[in-house]
Image (cartoon, rainbow, N blue to C red):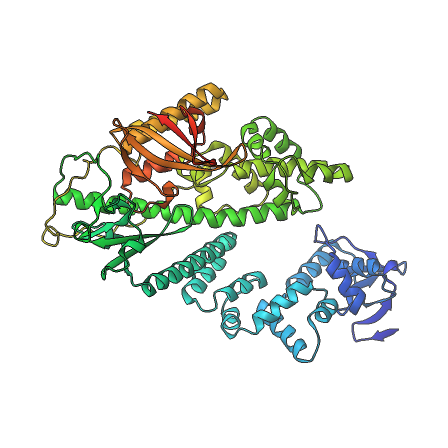
Length: 614
């Protein structure tokens, strides 16, 4: 069929007979979705072509449509044939104009169109089939179209469909939406990281609110940290108290006391901790449990206030970046899983595998020691129960072509398993190399991950202005005088000990690593408990393998308890800044098991104590 116009004719021609002219597009990707759309609907917009002196129809604009029509097996396509010339300049100009004059539908227009089709009774799967779109994308777009809030945003800001779908999660949080819109507009590579951080924050707020309501319902007054631990506070934590029979005071013991307090806090690992308090405990018949606090030289009120504000700001930095790390870890591992699901591995996969088995062998071997759990997760494979079972080996046996993929997953999984909040807090060159490789493959590092690679520094949290002398309340303090501490609260002695661990680790000498790690633990204990002579660790076991462990007691020279934890060090909320620093260093050192002097069962075979003499 031929339709003649004033300047050319529209003809329906077999696409296999068309000759594609040289094009300004250096590549013409033809996706499966595009081919499916052509197969379902045919070519809607005519292809622009000219006829040469030999009668051949030469495609000037529409090479993707031509290639897709051939692949789809379409019998004929509409072609607008004009009288043209074959000069290079004219061809290039026409091709540039033809491409530039196209404007892809905005997300707002596309979702509105899908909504109109749905209103006409067409299902999401039918819309997907007829428009060459994935069904999940159509469903996502229909959900977006139902939200007046998100639809309004799309008319003001050009967002992708995925970004718009994320906004649905924060439909009732205007501040979160505004933050996401700003990131999508100004720094889109950080959108997923920001969204995950906001999800984590929302989940934590919901958990805290639920616990707060529970405590109020049980008759407790909810306290702030300032209420509980501020200068002159009348509140005393129950963990510091004992009953007349020597038992640890619990919430049940104070049920009849009318004035009771509860401090709700988030631990370093994200768990919620509730610490209960009373006032005037001796009048209730309780006694104090601990001794051994060493008094220190007093600071002036001005110095004490400055130190308090500084430490508060440092604590906020740690908390904020720890939260950011948790969110970034989720996004990063999802990205790696998607990356490993690609049809083709990166060209440098063999190099990364080789480096993983050599330069990064400690991290990779550590990840392999538990059966490469994380590698299974990254590949979306369930690992069978049992220490010696491994679904990855079965995958390679069944499909040898998957060997490189499995090897890469094991290497990446091992390196991932050896990253933690310590990576950004202390500096970790192995983690930095891992992150730089991910970035080279296209992963967008979050700000806290950029701290690891050295591209950024921990963002300071602005401290509130100090009160004037007239505004400061009268106070006395026995806080230790300020020394040369860094933002993590580490003294020169602790920094030297950490540097020694890093140097020993670089050598790969296991004896040197063990000695340096032990020295760091001893230094950390001395930092928090100057009179301590031993640390007692509690291990819960399943058979011969310890699987839950933690610092239980700190003892002095008389074997008297200076500190004690019911569960683990993260469960204590009244710790000093020095104790926070020490616990952070000690609780992340599994090497303590190697330095213990003895182990003995307590009551049954499932609880074992190990003592480290300082």
